[in-house]
Length: 327
Image 1 (cartoon, rainbow, N blue to C red):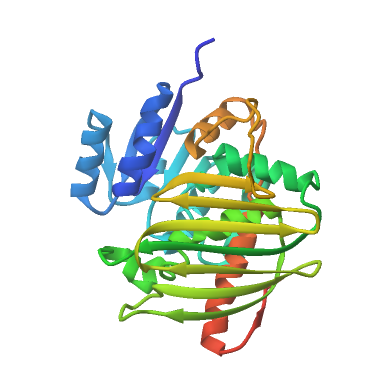
Image 2: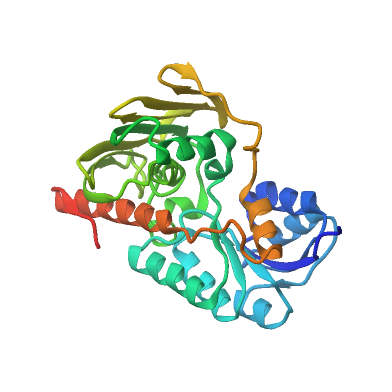
């Protein structure tokens, strides 16, 4: 049976949209890019080159949405703009795939999740790790109680932010630095896999001469007497990432290096992933859920916990003391 054809509009034509999302749209084979929106004509032209043909381009995403018949929008813009863009798209009855983080405010994150539910629209956050087979299976095992009650997590991610340019270093547009950017993947993976609920956060940061955080150390107290650390180091030589989840009856340890999964250990033995669990991508899942009427969709409540941890971490640095997570 042929796939139902979908029409999407893209908000933001930067490197991430061009390098990650457009190839996945091409792979689907039945998704049409109806239009794009970006304040940079150069970025829009580069995206069209990647897509292989010209499409209408707008400086204002609202004009774009109003001018086309669409099924969905895909958003890869500066973090601080996500809320208004997704809010508008949902008001127009569109599904939305949004780059991380969903928003830079827990209030705005909660509002978008609620609006998507009210509108019966799919709101998916593009955290790739949550669609990787090892992460999906680990979440399943934890929910089944294989490692018992989660007692603690120790997680970190490193990256070389030395060459970072543009809006990511502008706190007004980014909302924060390494912790809110690459670190958001780490926080999201940890919270999504474990379903831990944050209660209190204490944090320290180092800007390393920039206007946003480059290094950040974050300690979290979770519900049901679990504790953890979520750390980001942006002046390292390269990407390295580990998540160690310790339970009352076992442990799971993830190691990613240079953006590839190197190992996943269950009680110090390689995790054997069943054939029924296959690799996926946020984009493929998004298109599939639109076509099948939302089958398999879960409202991104974990994204609210991500926002709460991030928000409380920056507040803790500002206050110089632990901060209770907003309810």
